[in-house]
Amino acid sequence: MTTERKRGRGRPAKALDPGMSLLAALGAKVRELRKGRSLTLMELGELTGYSWQHLGAVERGSVAPSESVIVACDTALGAGGALNRMLPGVIREQAHLRHSSEAARRSGTEAPGSDVDWGRLSACGKRDSAVTSAVVDDIEMITMYQRRLYHELTSTQMLVPVDGHLGLLLSLLETPAPDRLRRRIVSAAGEAAGFSAWIWFDLGDHFKMGRRYGIAMDALAEGDDRGLRSYVSAYQAVTADAAGQAGEAVRHASAALDMADRSVTRVTRSWLHAVNATACAHAGDSRTALSQLGQAHGALEEAGDERDEWMYDFDHERLLGYEGNCLLELGRYAQAARSFEYALSGVPATCVRRRAELTVDLAQARLGEGETAEAVRLAREAITVFAQRGSASGMSRVRRLRDRMADQPAVRELDDFVRTWQE
Image (tube, rainbow, N blue to C red):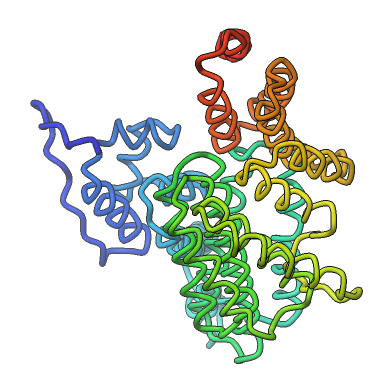
């Protein structure tokens, strides 16, 4: 954590009065959060990509920030959507001020003979818009489209729109709405927060990932959506597993199965068993891992066409990827390689990240079989995708593979290939 540098000679920081306006309150909140993290304006500028002069003006309430500035500040300061939720009010306030100023410039007086308070009428624009079923329908579609774009864009490109969407949903939770619509907004917020957590995981920031998962679980607890909570909890197991936290992975995977109860389809239950199997295998519990894997196959064989709307397209080929990971951990390298090859054959060409992840897994199986040259070739193929997509979590997978072959001459070829991306 950086520390606040002492101010040199110059103007002292301007005292802020958050009560002056919503714009001033927003600026004061930015400064409060920045000071709380012991960051200077220059350091915040480096984190957000905006000049420290502009950020200083935002803090003083002398300039109205754009949405991108506030989203970037909210992310950099770990505000959890607090700044994003303040922005709509600031925008309405500024629009009202501009309207009032323009009206005063044009006429300076009310229309002759009018008994209408035009200023009060214009203030209606400050009120929150009504949350309707149609609005919620559109909002629910956004996360679905964003998840599709995840396969086409880098995680860095996806970050701002995903966190911005999450901020919108959290702001809507502060707007009165009928219970049936609020439940849908809560579920949408939980799903969006879980997706944001996954992107932060892919970028290698586990602190912000954890914050987003906390937001997701809190929101879904309010809505009592056990199925979606189990889905998010299972992803917490996946990320903990990837970070080498086997105990945490087992805890989250077990909790996900318990939460799901009978509230999910057999397809989702199959995936939950597969996640549990992988976590147990990495924790050294091979007996439970194989049992969970058998239950995953059984649930999927019994599944019909019914799918949970938030569940990704989990199928037999994806289950084989989990099976391969279990077999890999148990030292059954040839069987694991076959599972990974079958899994790769069923991955759509558009899911390049998924293909790259399975390619690294296959490389580990080939390395276990003693086929080092093939393992390096597969690793290079995966590195190309992870570098193009800016996936820190993907690169970590390759790094673990590289460390396993550290005492072999082939590792130099892999290191040289990585250097070509750094130049």
